[in-house]
Amino acid sequence: MTQIHTIPSEGAALQCQVTGRGPLLLMIPGGGGTGQRYARVAERLSDRFTVAFYDRRCCGQSRGDRTAPFDMAQQARDAAAVIRALGCDSADVFGNSGGANVALKLAEQAPEVIDRLVVHEPPALPLLPDAATVIASSDRIVAAFRAGDPKAAFGIFLSEIRGLDGPPPGPPPEPRDMAFFLGHELEHICRFAPDLARLRGQRIVAAYGVGSEGAYYARTAAELATHLGVPLHRFRGHHFSFADTPDSFAEDLSTALDLA
Image 1 (cartoon, rainbow, N blue to C red):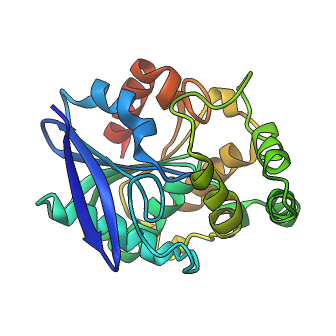
Image 2 (cartoon, rainbow, N blue to C red):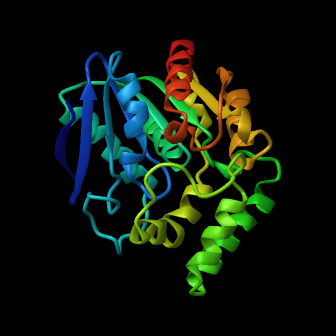
């Protein structure tokens, strides 16, 4: 049975869904910020974990100040607030895409709340040797959106996602959430540079899908693993496979956690 909680954090109200039994596994969503994309894989993990997923502030059913600048440190404090509000001192943590960057920031700021961390395809572009080129590409997406062409902006974004034959699987984001991502979050997420010194020695696994091979967000996972000396685990599928192949994704995530 799924429980719904509303969790206060620094002027925001975060809607969180919880299902299953066992140790807590927090799943942090990426662009668009809605946790519902994890619902199918959470169901597959619910016999092993108490799985919590939430809408990040200002996204989905969560509330917050949509005019405030995006703040990665605040996003990380929100994640810690969810863990503590659910009555736990610490949890296993998973993040995909921008949610993986939030998870890395959480590990920098509050390593004590993380037992094991799996970061799946984190777009931490400063890690790449060709960072300037890839960041410029993300800036073109933002520029297209701010020029008043959200369809073109989203098209550019999707053109860089490997392994997809159409739109991303899972519940489609609400237009307001996608607009918030493209116009408010993307440039900050892509410029996030993890503090490698703070992350070393933690139980972290970097991961990417075999269908994402060569994509910038797969290359960042490999760079992170190399810099930190942590395992690099290859999942089956692509950037969004938690939504369309949840059985294999749940197996791969469980394996990755065991590697941490």
